[in-house]
Length: 220
Length: 395
Ligand SMILES: Nc1ncnc2c1ncn2[C@@H]1O[C@H](COP(=O)(O)OP(=O)(O)OP(=O)(O)O)[C@@H](O)[C@H]1O
Ligand SMILES: [Mg+2]
Image 1 (cartoon, rainbow over the protein chains, first blue to last red):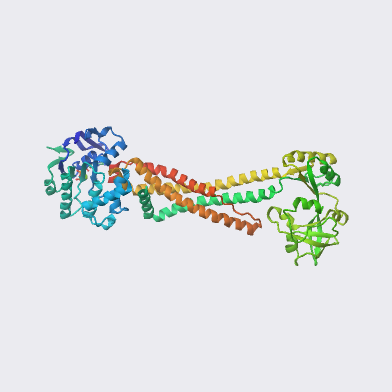
Image 2: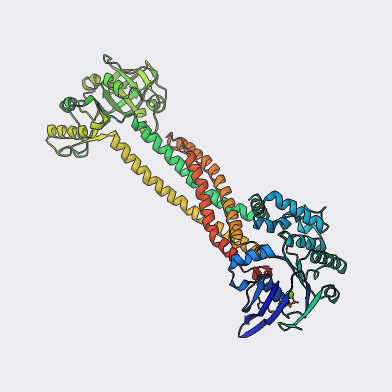
C-alpha cells in the first residue's frame, strides 16, 4: 500500500516559491489501477516522482508498505526503486547503446541477478509484451510503441509490486496507446498496483479510479 | 561483469575519436616511462656489466700535477710499481706506460697513444675482455712488435693495417702482430691505442713514466683497504699528499650507479609530466562522458541502480580506457627503447641494449590504470551523486 501524508514539494524560483505539490494526501491500495489527470503544471509528474522514490519531498512523507521513505538514505531509496517499483516514462528512456534484451536485463544487472537468469527472464518479458522477435534490436531500430513495450518489460524485470507510468501513452498513437493500456491492465490483473498519469480521458476511463489534480493539489 | 564491460565497450565505441585521443595521451606517457626505464636499465647493465668483470681491480692514477711541470699530469716510477707489488693482498700489479707518439703508416701521420705494458701481466688482467680479432697478443720476449686497436687498424689511416704490416712509431719500425677486437662504448680508448711491450716502451721510445697502474687484489673484500695503502705508499715515495688516486672498480660501479639513478629519476620525472597531462585527459573524457550521459544515469537510477553501480560503471570506463592506453604505451615503449638503443648505437657507437623487464611492463599498465581510475574518480562520483529526477529531466 502507498500512502502520502501532507506531501509537499516547493521549488524556489528566484524570490518566488512554486508549490509543485501542496499537502497531498492520497491512499493507493495494493492491486489498484489509478489514473491521475490534470492540466499541465498541476504537479502530476512531481507526485509520481515522489511516490517512485526518484525525488525527496520538501515536507510530508510517502509511505510504501508502511516504510517511511523519507527516512531512507540514497541507497535505501535505490533499493525500494529496484525491488518494489517499475517506472515507465513518456520518452521511453531506453539506453540507446543497448539492445532490447540488454535494456530489459539492465535492472536485474543492478540487482545482481545471475547473467543466464536475467537474460532468460528478459527474453520471457519481451515475449510477454509481444516483442519476442525483436530482442536484438536497438531502440533506434524500433517504433515508439515498440520502445515503450520494451520499457514496460524493463519495468517488470525485478517483478515490482507497483508500476508507475508518467504519460506512458503520451508519445504514441492512439492504437499503440490502447495496446499499452492493455498491457498495463494485464499487469493489474496479475495483482500489481498501477499508477498512470495521462492527458487522455479515454485512457483514464479504463483505470479503476481516477484522481484529478490542479495547482499541486489532488481534488476529491 | 561481462555486461558492465560490454556497456563500457559500447560507450567507448560510441565516442571512438575521443577515447582514441585519451588512449593516445596515456600511451605517450606510459610509453615514455617504459622506454626510458628500459634504456636506463640497459645503460646501467652495459656499464656495470663491464666493470663487474673487473670488480677485483684497482686503478691507480696520478692525480695532482707535480711542481714545476704545470699542465702535465704526474707519473709513477718503477719504484712505485715495486712498492705496490709488495703490498699484502695484491695479486698482480701492471704498469701502463702511455705516451702520445707520432705514428706513421704509408705516408699518413698521427699522434697516437702508445702504451707500454708487460704482456704477461696484461694477459692476466684483461685477457678475458680484450681479445685479438686477428693475429695474437704481445708475448714477453717480443721485440719491436705491437698490437693495435680496432680504430687504428681500420679508421686512422687511408689503408687498413693488418697483421705483419709495419708501422713507424717515433721513427722506429714496429711489426703488427695483432689487431684487437672492437671495444666501443666505455672502453673505446682501447680502440685508438697501440700496445708495445714495456721493454720496447722504455728502451726504444724512452718512456720511463708509468701513467697508470692496474692492481688485481686477491680478495675483493680487502680492495678498499688496499687502495688506501697504495695511495699512502706512492704518496710517501713522492713526498706528496693526495698525489695518488687508487679507485676500486667497486666504488666506480657505485658512482656510476648513483649517477644513473639520478639520470633515471630525472627522465622519469619528465615522463611523469606527460602522465599528468594524460590524467587530465582521462578526467576530461570521463567528465564529458558523464555530462553526455546524465540522462542515461538518471534512467539507470530510476530503474534501480545504486550510486555505487553508477560509480563502478564510470570507473570501469576510466579503467578500461587507461588500461588500453597502458598496454599500447608498453608496446610503444618497448619499440621506443629499441629505437633509442639503435639511435645511440649509430650516433655514439655505444652499444646499449634496452632491457625490457616484465615488471616494468606490468607496472606501466598498473600505473596507467591507477592514473585512470584516480582521475576517473571525481567524474564518476559526480555521476553517482546525481539526483535521479534532475538527471532524467536533463536532455
Ligand atoms: N525542477 C524544477 N524546478 C522548478 N520548478 C519545477 C521543477 N519541476 C517542476 N517544477 C514546477 O512544478 C510544477 C509542477 O510540475 P510537474 O512537472 O509536476 O507538472 P505536470 O503536472 O507533470 O505537468 P505536465 O502535464 O506538463 O507534465 C510546475 O509549475 C513546474 O514548473
Ligand atoms: Mg509531467
